[in-house]
Image (tube, rainbow, N blue to C red; front, side):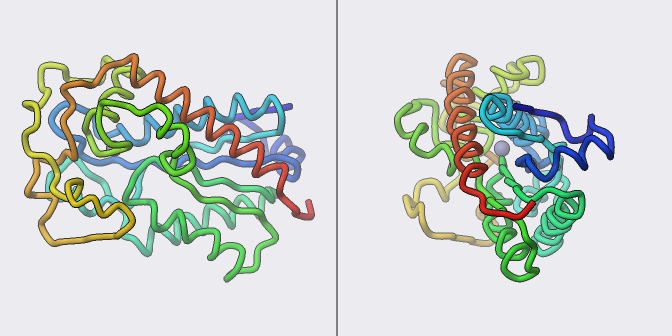
Length: 258
Ligand SMILES: [Zn+2]
């Protein structure tokens, strides 16, 4: 079986591979991540998960990994600076255009794997646009990694903070595992300070928006003082395993005409 980087292949190689492969599109963001993490955090994490998962899934089914989309819907981070955001409707259209292009290139199985909370609504909607509204003959999935790997994360019972949170214990642990050189260890915020208020509501299923809520914090959801590379590596491994299983199940369940 094959795993391949979409952008490393030629037009003709893609034409041969596309009809029988699942293409994975990682969705990132470029946004502020507190004083101690780089603005690439979400993109770096989801790229790593996608590459590990694709490599593992490719033992069973053909997988192609597209370049990570480095921008998403992150208007809520604009007041902090260090953020590049695409508006909600534009972003949904960008995902729709990516899917339409991949269909035109011969792909019939597509998974958007998301790594940024602000993208989640559009990721949930894009399959309906492509398949139901636009009538593409394509098998489309959209999921965020913390949703796809919810069972594995529950079993892990991580003690560094909520997953993914934002610039807190989990994401800091992942960055310490992946790119320790990009973590500003001397800029760690003081423990338990300026936690983003929404996480305290406990209304996990509700979509709650209040003006100015993010500015009540310093741009993080939770404390990063317990972050460590070992926890980050274990979490990335388990999340990638879960995403790999999803890719294989998705591929095998697809009933599309190539
Ligand atoms: Zn993040």
